[in-house]
Image (cartoon, rainbow, N blue to C red; front, side, top):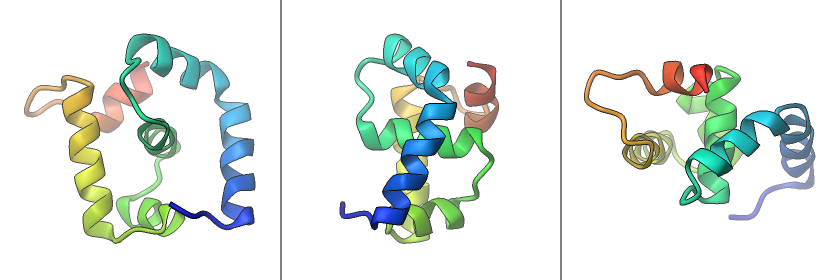
Length: 89
């Protein structure tokens, strides 16, 4: 995916502020891709799927699919909140 310079700067600042969270993600879930880690950080910041789609340059439907795939990689059961899980890390 190609991100604008402004989007890359935003990610860099967010990741700097939330580096402990990213480290926990990396240690706890080493199979996560960079995109999945970025998605988790955005979810931790309470971004909506529509906002995430805009930042990632994808459709809202693709953002929903990415959330679903992240849930699977985090081994969440049906009914468990992805956002709540991420906030509790």
